[in-house]
Image (cartoon, rainbow, N blue to C red; front, side):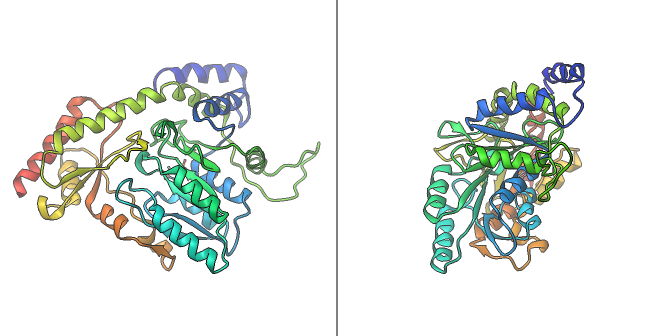
Length: 367
Ligand SMILES: *Cc1c(COP(=O)(O)O)cnc(C)c1O
């Protein structure tokens, strides 16, 4: 927290709106609309909820296929399952680690040829790396699918100078406790489509019809964001740019210290992207470094430093056994060779130095 948040929360308390409604929710949506460039926003309980609402609005249902990225977090996929539809996983490319647009095109083409229209495509902005929105939007347009950008990890990242996700039919963002800015828990659905946002808000409020009594013609959800959380969000949005700046610095410090070691690499940044570097991700060539990310993780853990493997690709998850995967080798290799390093904005240069020293001494030992 930056300190701003408490003032915003105090204001919310003073207004006595301790509810999933109130002036701060509207303010937060308007401010997010302003920073993202999307015309309409709905503040909701989580990023997962935002995606669920978008897919539900599009009528995704039993038997439908939704194309999505294999290298991602479960919350970007589970709403497909909530609606009874089937995920089709697409592999990543090596330049962005996000969805491979050539594979996406092949899959859209072959499904269209077979007369199976795809309702929705979801790209994920992995570790804050914006997906190639223009290409994805063009492909979705051509094949009649709605394009949703899962920008949960990319709040504050830029794509060709635009806010990550802008240019998609809808984009979802997360303010979960682990993300670059947080409302302790929360999410945002953003779109230029007014009907989509209005319908999502309606569904997020238990699909309550406009009657004096409670009338329900369909089933909705309890997905609204609390006014208190929205107040925290207002304080956090004010420091978003400085948070991105610090995360990018942290990435550069790691890179400067470690990239001279043979076999050590870092997540690339394609020319369209200004990644928010939510997490710094390094890769180890197992042949050159003669070790594995797991050994590095354990060495760090011994001195009480937490690091983590990358997202385990969805097509490797037991729960998605039998689902279709297009490609797969790139995300499998990233999972096998990558490691997420500590990247919190509160880290000092000494903290980074300590982490790097541990990694360096381990790599020296084994080589
Ligand atoms: C965090 C995250 C989500 C889900 O957001 P929640 O707010 O935790 O529900 C979805 N997709 C990706 C890629 C995420 O990192």
